[in-house]
Amino acid sequence: MLAPLLPFHHRRVLRALTCALALSVAGCGQGSDGEFTVAWIGDEEDLLAEGLRLSSGGQLVRAATESGLVALDARGEVVPSLAERWIVTDDGLSFIFRLREDEWADGSEMSAQSVRDALRRNLRALRGTSLGLDLSPIDEIRAMTGRVVEIRLTTPVPELLTLLAQPELALSEEGAGPMTMERIEAPEVSGEEPSAPKLLFRFKPPADRGLPDMPEWQEGVRDLLFVPTSAPSALTMFDDGDASIVLGGRIDNLPLVDIGPLSRGTLQIDPAIGLFGLRVREAKGLLEEPALREAVAMALDRPAVMAPFSVGGWASSTRMVAPDLPGDPGLVGERWADQSLEQRRETARARVQQYLARQGGETPGPARLTLAIDEGPGLDMLLQGLAEQLATINVRLERAADPAAADLMLVDRVARFSDPRWFLDQFACSLRQGLCSEQADSFVAQSMNALDPIVRASLIAQAELQLARDNVYIPIGAPIRWSLVRSGTQGFSPNRYAFHPLPPMAEVPR
Image (spheres, rainbow, N blue to C red):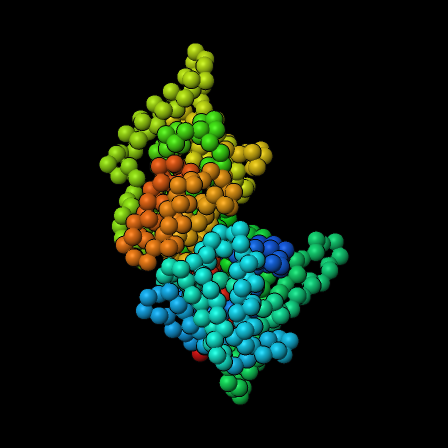
């Protein structure tokens, strides 16, 4: 009865102590029937969307209930799935997979021909998407003898396996994955808003997962209850011990988390790679010329913008491609490295003033830019920080009333694979998602046919430099993805893809 009288942070301490005591009895975040509960920050509609354009939550659901040739484990590393093993030829142009002995959910044989046809269907369906561009080096898919499938490439893609592990590359929509899913409607309570339905995930028997039959296999697994909900509700579930993990955290809801001594060891920040910055929609107004767009980029003190979020280890960058990727030849460096912040701002102010003078008027006022950015405590903080930064060069930044007509849009996206081409593909003109560079696209296209790794790396570097010269994007740094994980929980690991599959969480710790 004393808890409601305590300050909020004291109530969190009390809840943590209560949960610690409960762990010795039944386990916090675990129901009476042994269910393991995961709270997901998001809407149920995003989780159950059909087709090949999935939200991050939808990717988790698809990965649990469907299977591709390979999958990603808790560490973001590739593991076997429908393919039990594979080899890569020395030239990197051929990946040969041996399929496990299995059947599709409808009882038909999982043959090399059926897998080939399913892969081809997925590739066709992904045309026109950035993931489709990532997969464009695939030249041919062949069904060989027995249970062997070969994928031939036009150019080496060292991380092809990571691409094939994406949930959108699942080869069946008939439930060929390791788990089944059941939608559970929340009971109606008179006078209260109905709660969102919950998703119950349950492991299939080993034989249905392509594994040898194991006696008493159910002792090693548990049901997983996946609860889509709002950020405040997810945090309450975690505080009250009703969930062991909170997934789906982004910068917009990070300020809701108590980043203090109590959260050490529970707040997990992914070392994610990807895009976090401002995309230019059109070359008009203040953004009509590359030099003016560069002025906006030069004005930002990136560490200062992100300082209020107190994210340890977060690194800013002026590059479009994440620095220090595997195999990065170091041909592209950070921009304006030889200039101080004040020198950059002095140049930027002069360009803005010249632009304003061209617009007429005796005393030119601030130039105006609008940003398409959602609402939320973290995004409000971000918008305020960016606005304060741009005010130093006489630019007023405001939230766009109509996002479709905004000058800039926030890009907050985690990479699918650790290759510069993923970053470049996000800005391809064929996607029609904002200002782009046909010259950069040409460099990327030439790299697809380059077998010499030095030539290929040079073309990719030229593409990045061209996009930087055209200033189609204003980088800030790496995207922020966070989770809450109760101490002692297994099956979760921070990783660069911020992808946390459900099956490992449903395994009983040994």
